[in-house]
Image (cartoon, rainbow over all chains, first blue to last red; front, side, top):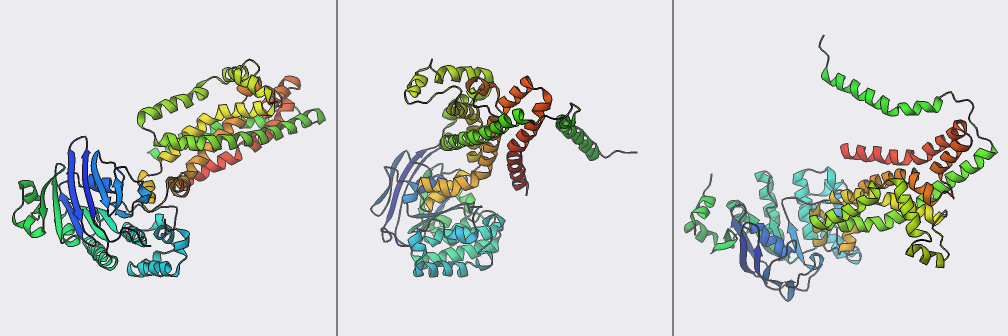
Length: 243
Length: 257
C-alpha cells in the first residue's frame, strides 16, 4: 500500500481545552523520524495524539501531513493515513487473527502478490504463525499486542501514533516489541510519535528527540541528554529519576 | 446439623421456578375433551397463519426502521438520547386498549393520515395493514430500546480503530458494529416478537379481523368455552415461544462462556 504523502513533513499545532487544562502544543516531524511525548499522567499527551488521529477535534490550530490537511476542516478518520496503537490492542473479537491483520485492506490490494508477500513477512517476523487462524478473542494480551502491531503495519502508514502501547506488559515483551517497531520504522520509513510516562521506554523507542508536557503546555523539547542534563522543572526531574 | 446456605438458596430458586411454571399445569386441567371440530379448526388455523405472517411482516418493518434509529440514538449525547428514549417509552407505557383506540382514530377515517391512506385504497381498520401497523406500534419501542443497549455494548474504541484502518462509517457499521451487536439485537427482536404476536388489547380494537391468535382465543372462549381454547393455546405457545426462548438461552450462554 502506498500513500501520496509518504515523503513529507508532519506539522501540527493543537489547541484543545479540556475540563482541567488547556492543551497547547506545536510539533514538527520529518519523514522517518520519531518524537517522544513525555510527561506525567494527565499532562495532555494522549489528547495530542487523539487530536492528530481525529478521535478528538482540536478547538483551534492545524494538523497537516504534507499537503493533506487533517484539521481544519476535520478530515474523517478513515481518510487519515496513520497507524494508531493504544494500550488496548483493539482487536475485533469476532474475527480471526488473519482477518484482523488484513482488516481494512481493499480487496483489489489484498489479492496482489506483493501484498500477500508483505502480510506473510509480517506473520513470520512477528511470530504470528501459530495464532494465524485462531479467533482474536482467544489469544493472550501479549499476543494481541503483536497482532495489533501487524495490523497497523499491514497498511504501511507514513505516520504512526503510539499511545502507551506497552502498558501492562512484561519487560522482555516490551523490549521485543520496541525492537520490532524500530526495525519496521527503518524498513518502511514511517514517522513515529509516541507517548509514555516511562522515560526509559520512550527513550529507547524515540531516541532522537522528546517533548515534555506539563498541564498541557510544552516545558522542554530537545534530545534526551538535554532532558536528563538540565530538566526544565522539578516535576520533570522527578519523572526522570529511577525509582 | 448445619445446612449449606448455597443449597438453601438453590431450593428457594427451585420453588420460585416451579411457581413460575405452575400455570402450565393448566394444560392438563380436567375441562372435558378438547374441541377441534371443523368450526374450531378452520378459524384457528387461519389465525395461526395471520399471526405468523403478519407478525413477521411487522418484524421486518420494525428492524428496517428501528435498527438505524437505534444506531443513531446510541451515538447521541445524553440529553438528546433521553428525549428519544422518552418518546419510545410512550407506546410501551400506554395501556394497549388506549393505544388501539388512538390508532383507530388516527389511522381510521377520523384521522388525516387515515383519510389520505384511504385515497390509495389502504383501509386501516380491520385489515392486514391495520394489524401490521398496530404490531409495529406495540413492538418498536421494545426493539429500539433493546437495540440501543446492544449498540452501546460495542466498544467505541473498536469502531474508531476500524475507521482508522480505512473503513468509511457505513462499512464500520456493517463490519464491526453490527456483527458485535448481533446477539443483543437478536434478543431485542425476540422480545419484540413475543410482545407483538401476543398483543390483544390494541389489536382487538384495530384489527378484530383478520383475527390473529390472541383474538381468536378470545373468540373461541366467548363462543365455545375452554375446550375450544386449549388446542389453539397449545399451537400459540408452540408458535410464539420456542424461537425467542432459544435466542435468549443462546445469548446468555454466549455471555457466560
